[in-house]
Length: 411
Image 1 (spheres, rainbow, N blue to C red):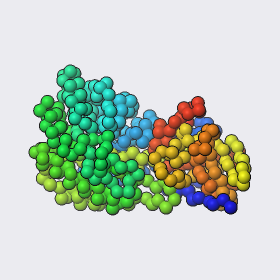
Image 2: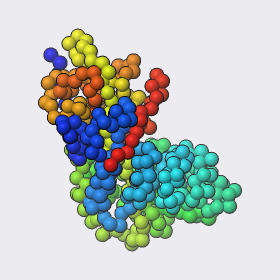
Image 3: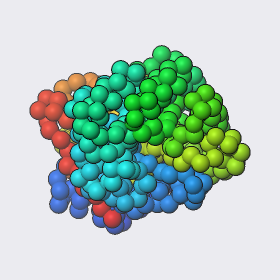
Image 4: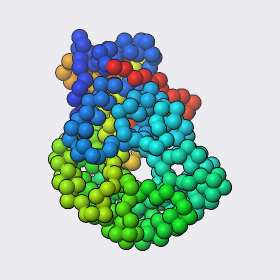
C-alpha cells in the first residue's frame, strides 16, 4: 500500500474557469497553447495585492525594498520597481538589470560577499549604496572611489550576534561569510568616514523564510537594539538602516500564513520608542519571496503516464532544471511536497496517488511525491504553485541540455 503524502497549501487569489486553473483571467491550457510548455506565469494582480497588504500592515515610515535575487525576470522587475521603494541587488549583473528596469541609483543597495573590483567600480560610478561585507572590501571600495574621484556611498553590513529563530536560512548568530562581526563595525565606519566616503548606515540581516510572527518581532527588536548600540559607539546617527527581511510564505503541508498585521503593529510600537540616536534614521526592510513567491505558477505538460511496481508516475516536460526548490534540492533537509494540482482538472476530486516527475534521467527529478490527484493522462497540465521566487534563475536550466523555461507576466 502506497502512503499518500500531502501537498502544500495552494495560495489564495487563484480562480478556476470551467474547472481549469486561470491566471490573470486566462486558462492554463490557453497560456500553454500560446507560449509553450514548460512555462512560468507571474500575476501582476498577485504582486500588487501582496504589496498593498504589506503597506497597510507596516508603519508608514518604513520603506519596502524588493530583493531582486528572488526573481529578476525583466517585465516583473520593471513592475516591482514601480511598486517598491528600493531595489536590493547582489551582483554587477543585477545592477545592470535594475538600472535597465528604471530603478533610480539612489534607491539601489548592493549586498553580497566577494564583490569584484569591477562591480565596486560600476556601483560607485552609478552612485548606488554598497553594503560593505569586510574590512578588505571597505579598503578596495575606498581605493576605487579615490581613483575615480567619486565619493562612494557605503553602508556596513553587520553580522549580528543573533539569528532569526525558525528561519529556513540563518544569516547571523555565528561565523558567517556575510557582513562584519560587531567589534569590527565601528573601526570600519571610522576608516571610511576618515577617507571621505559617505557613510549610509547599517544592513543587518539575521535570517529568512520565517513564518512565526513572534520570531520576526523578536529579531526586529534585537536588530534595532544592536543598531542603537553600534550608533552610540560610533557617536553618529546612521542615515539608513536596512532591517533585513525574513518574512516567509507557506510552502509545505501544515505551513500557515505569517501574521503580517501582528508584525507591523509590533514594529510600529518599536519605532515609537526609538532612542534619540535613531530618531532621524530612515528604515527599510528587504523582501524577495514574500513579495513575489505566491504570485507565480509553474505549468508543465504531462508527456507520459507509466506504472512501476504498483506506483504511478506522471512524467512531465519540465522538472528540477526549472524548479529545483520544488524538487527538494534547494536547501531543504526533508523533502516535502510543494502546492501542486492538475491544472485542467482543478474541480475534480483526487482519485489516485501519483508521483509527478520531470524529464531528467535522475531520481532527484521529482516535483511531487505520492500525492493525491485527480486521474491525469498525457496532455494534462501540472501546476506547481509558489513558483514566483527562486525558480527560473535559481535552477540548473542547462542541465542535460534542457534549456530555460519560458516566462510571462500576466494581469
